[in-house]
Length: 494
Image 1 (cartoon, rainbow, N blue to C red):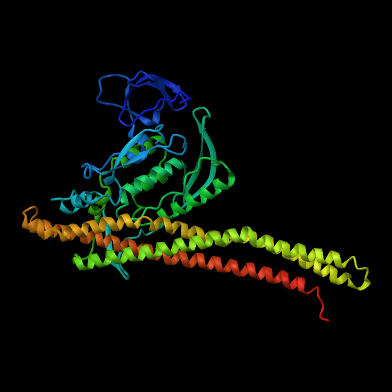
Image 2: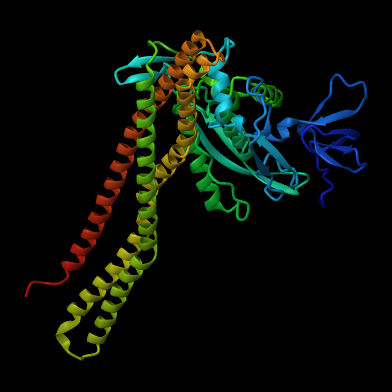
């Protein structure tokens, strides 16, 4: 590919020809005899092999294609195809155009086989991790940690690899509870997103990261915007009582060295409690719900999230149009008024009449005032509308996760409804049906706990951003009013 890099695929065995190339690279040869450079981080030694110098392409190279859950390992015929972007330096799996098949049951919302496996398992493996669900003032809720923390994303720095052939931006992350800093590239955030999605995505909305950008990715404005959005995403994860306490998230924020990072990374990729099996870790401190209530709760969540999604998208559309007016046509109109007034004052000054200099100066200043207002109008969206739009953008990401979550719950509900038929055909026992009801009830409690967390954050976030928006709007119009009054004071009562 022009830089002497060898294309490798997941599971491919290559032979080391030079392990000491340096710079994090080694030279290898594939089965076709092609030689080239391979990142040392993307390969692992086959311990059981008797052939010295043999490596296998590390599955960590394909970050989002990492080890499937043993529990969810059955094949799904309906696969989706993902093709890597060969030109995207942010991608942690840029396998030069290699296509891979992703089984849908590795992701939230995967079809019924995964749900069935959870509902019909004769005996669920007792995981070490436990996620309690308690009953609070507003219904089921997650257990919140006694102390919370945030993580500050700052100090973006440009780095390079492959002797300068590839560049990237690295960010410093500092947790408020430890005051320790770690550095991460965008691809590391991408890895974390994939792990959280695979781990919790059937129960908890994990919004996408801010979009990647190839062209202009080192421009100051883009770096600032992406850092701001990464900060928003990370803050959301820190605020979630389940996600923030998870091993994979804590590992991402607190690793001490490269060895600890790689060890934790591989451990996370081998996690078997993923997909709908994450519900097996949840323990509601409440009696089982009946199917009517379970279905009603699920439908209510579906209706609300769909309606809110529509409302958020509408506000984003209107806000975007308003932003364009404020930074385009509207300032130009004020500028035109200002220039027209100054032009009129200039005409008046040619009259030769001695007693109108004060009027001409006042009209000129009024024209300049309108030019100042034009600048204020153009700059104002950055001070208020920006934050309202960003909050809605974040919630759009959250709301986009709910169709998959609701789909998993509806799949469970339908399967429980079929239980009597399954008993009649001796496919399951009455005890199996009771287990299904208990597990569907657990899923419902988890959904309700998540929605209570969602609503609590929604109320806080929209109250905060609306206060900011209206305060800035009031200040904006007060500034304009003050300038207009000052211009008005130059015109005496006659």
